[in-house]
View 1 (cartoon, protein in one colour):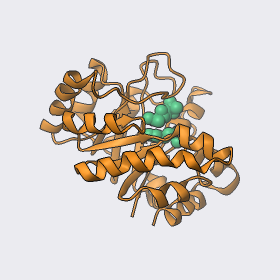
View 2 (tube, helix red, strand yellow):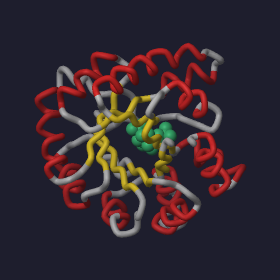
View 3 (cartoon, helix red, strand yellow):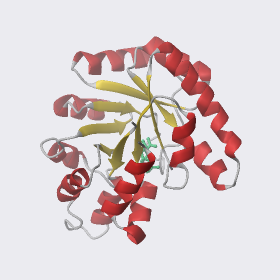
View 4 (cartoon, helix red, strand yellow):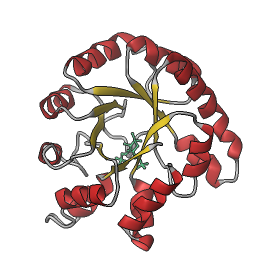
Length: 237
Ligand SMILES: CC(=O)[C@@H](O)[C@H](O)COP(=O)(O)O
Ligand SMILES: NCC(=O)COP(=O)(O)O
């Protein structure tokens, strides 16, 4: 079974657009869990345009499933994650002005830096995951760094799949084989959706977790949040 971690960044974006507290992020997180979500993911960015650092602290006592915090391990981010001690931290190399995540780590060039960061989080009992493109050398580099898991950056798969090209799964299946051979856990995320999730899961053995936000919230506008979560759970069995 693959766990579904619901990324609630988009709910924070909606809330922030009016400056009040609707939708109530803490209530939404609890509701998502009661609808069957097996984790809550947030990705605070330095400009706090959606999830704010304070949201992360407030969610600490609310999330009772797996809490996954994603971001670039700048000092402010590291301090926050170490104070909250979520289930998992996912390291993403985003530039400050990135609209959304747009690349995985070069785990070879950044080896020493990542070893320090991963060691720090693991010493504090926090599971680590490193966001990588589906490149076999980057998965091998992640192993060298000592991370518990990788998160496969799935935008290229999602884009090609929507254009009818299913061959884009190949690099992901190859990267997953390397990860499985090396004993690293596999997560995945970015632009996964009700349309493309089943094919992805079918081809990635031992897919432990997917984090999904943008498409899931878009789909919920038409189908309802509880219904959509259950549609994902059905596809991830
Ligand atoms: C790592 C990843 O792919 C997601 O966390 C994605 O970056 C969500 O961030 P935004 O909601 O800011 O697009
Ligand atoms: N790690 C990926 C994530 O949390 C959600 O990405 P998206 O579904 O919003 O593209």
